[in-house]
Amino acid sequence: MSAWTFLWAFLVGGAICAIGQVIMDTTKLTPGHVMSILVVAGAVADGLGLYDPLIKFAGAGATVPITSFGNALVHGAMHEAKIHGLIGVITGIFEVTSAGISAAIVFAFLAAVFARPKG
Amino acid sequence: MARLGRSTWAFGERQVAVIAASTVAGTWEGQGPLSDAFDVRLDDDRAGQDSWERAEQAMFRRAAEIACEKAATRPANLDLVIGADLNAQLTSFYMGLRGLARPMLGVYSACASICEALAVAGLAVATGFADVVLAGTSSHTSTAERQFRYPTEYGVQRPPTAQRTVTGAGAAILARGRGKWQITHATIGEIADFGVRSPWEMGAAMAPAACDTIRQHLADTGRSLDDYDLVVTGDLGRVGLDILRHFLVEQGVASASLVQERVEDCGAMIYREDQPEVFSGGSGAACSALVTFGHLFREMERGRIHRLLLCATGALLSQVSAQQGDTIPSISHAIAFERGD
Image (cartoon, rainbow over all chains, first blue to last red; front, top):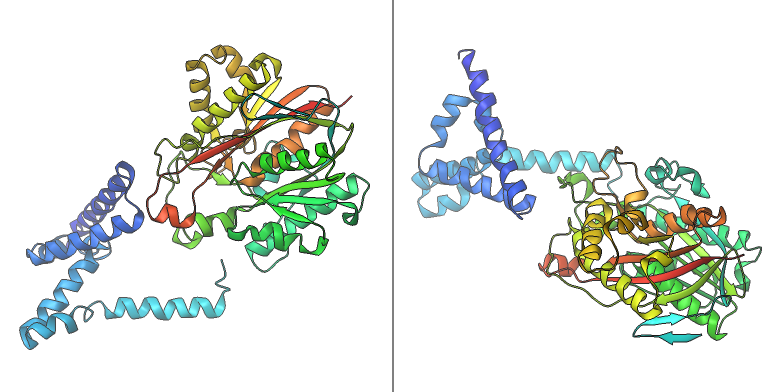
């Protein structure tokens, strides 16, 4: 890993966020729409075999933004599909992403225990 | 008492008086430019309660109590209590004031509600169906966010046209005869809907309604803008106020310089421009109540304003209509005040 990785991570990660911001500012789409667009874009990019090379190139610049979630969904589904066939698409979707989803549930629970989630 | 033109009620010059008014301001409002105009400045928007909704109810109750104290009366002497807030089923009004145990009328025209409440209260006093009436409204930034927008934790980005819902409550007590302030006219507004859908552009959605009501009021009463020392809208914000001034000049209501001098907006007055995250200004049912009962009534007492037209503006969207992508109908009702001598 060369020092350049930091620069590419910064630029690629920043570019993905900038795309999201431009969509927010120039259209009437809600934040939910923008998030879905980025997730689907990540999934499509992985389907085309483009996301892995991007991760290799930019590291966390590609894995931290929400596009990486779409990539992970497709990754898990394709991997399981190879082993178990069509049913693997269903079981594999959350294989790679389960850590993130479980963490969200666990941390939300902990926050609710220690704070007062009343709004 | 007479009906003028299409939609204006003339109560007569010395028939309906505001004998006392009270204001309870939230933290940001209390730090704004009108800070010293409020009776109570809270240093905690929870007001010692365990939810935002209960906090808003407590503010409403406090405003009603202070208004009664100032009018040297007791809640038991109120013949009628009229009010509104932005929560579904008017919970701040009904639950906040349930302890008063007086006849109550809940009204709703979103942030234009204070004018609707004052109009109905004025009507009750002028006709003699009630001698002493309390009219008030409340709003709270956190209850409004929860109901109409996004959860605070979501941290959604807002455009510069967005407004901050005012936290606080205001109440006025009306009685027959003469007082510090007289209510002379009420003009009931019509719906205006120019197809704005974005809840971030309330000022643009409501400006046509305010323009219509101001024009209708002037036409019905045969007055001109020059007859008022100040015409103040409820919560158009800086963006909406610019649009309204533009409309008024374009439609020949008055010259650009007179419009610039006489037409203002409570939402544009309640916060400093450099306060963080207030964007275009304030909004909410308490916005015009706080600015009018706090700041503008004081200006009238000091003799700086003799005649005032308050055109509170309301965006009539609901949580469901907004989610279904419907357009935002708007309404504005006007109340004309005169300094009591």
